[in-house]
Length: 255
Length: 302
Image 1 (cartoon, rainbow over the protein chains, first blue to last red):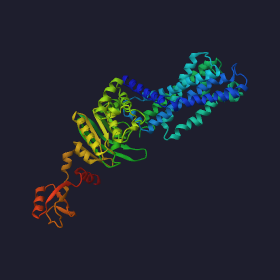
Image 2 (cartoon, each protein chain N blue to C red; image 1 turned 90 degrees about the horizontal axis):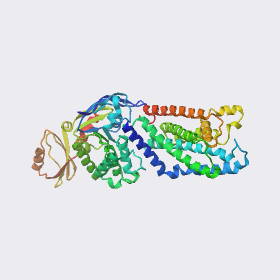
Image 3 (cartoon, helix red, strand yellow; image 1 turned 30 degrees about the vertical axis):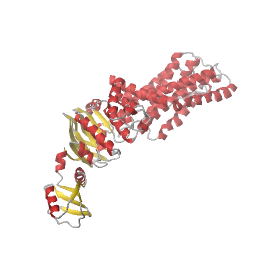
Image 4 (tube, rainbow over the protein chains, first blue to last red; image 1 turned 180 degrees about the vertical axis):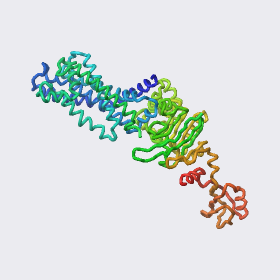
């Protein structure tokens, strides 16, 4: 067990070092993108819109934009890092060693979480500047932030395991995660939707993450926050199990 | 004790290619063992199975008595591997690559640094420890992979074509290094295309072809199987004709170069006496080809 923990800390250290070594690619772009969102959607367009749940539009979208950054960066980091390790074949360093599969998964996932949460903190700082964000319930901010970055890092790892070429790294973020995030209540409250579309929206897991995270900042929610936490825990268990299964089977990494 | 025992190992890839057809071999602890074979013979597949990069179809593999089916992690701790192609992150520093590998085997950062320094110094890379791997020369990258393979002090070191693409001087240096490692009691398995390398380093040699072990024996026994040998002679004066000699075939390559093929049963003194008798003075002599190469071709083509 001690050996496995040392191996895990090594992978985490390597992943974290990578994020800060290429900070100009990993940390700066999402902050610039989110700043543009705040300026365009929050300040220019948002000033023309009415309040939602008692908050101006800028304040309403801020938690969703932070969550969007956490989701995309957690996912992107794990998928690109693991695929890069496969592409350069340095994943073999791990595979020939006695490092257990769970340590490999948690090592890469820790990198995704570090990047997702670092970007989340940076975007929070930006949003404080634009929206004067306050904290309603720190516990839910932390729990939703941690669980969401964990879940999306695990999902990115699965994408990385299956990816065979560079195109495969961007397909899921482009065609699945981005649409689900935009439809996940970042820019609107689902209470504004007709009944049918409100029900349909609840199939989208991202809505629970955004809603719970927003509750932590603003104290308003459309869905049960405990339900959101439960869904994230279920997703985390399923995705962690799926990662272990795929590594054990050697999918994408062993012939 | 046996460092590696392979029994009835088979591998069929999903594409249907049968890479190994039930190979069996045994490497004793302390051996310097050469695994030779043409491209696609099954060498890398065998090493891949031993190191878990490839899953076997059937058969058994034991590392120092530990069956990989029973406890692969324990078996892996005893193996160090130096692959054929570069497989480290080119963006990382030399010291980080080596220390991370030690960490994957459960060595603390402090232990890893001590071991990394030892091998980076021995391989002449200590001064480059803070350099990103992409800035190293080809030879340095090869040495980095050897340091990385040794950092956790494995009892069995497996090298897949370790000197491919390195210059002669560096190759000789690596040979010295590997001989010292083996002299210290470390078991080494080497695959190589350079048959001269196998002849120089390995005490036991197995030849694999078409997924089967063609021969697995000591180097001396192997070379003893060669019944003829070809030499190239440089003569002092031009030679236009040579009188025939029983069992020996002479070919005049150019005016001052003769090629002769002779059986091992015949003494070189007989040849020289025959040539001297006809006024031919030999100034220098060399083997036409590496002896092992001749045998290799004979066995692989059989």
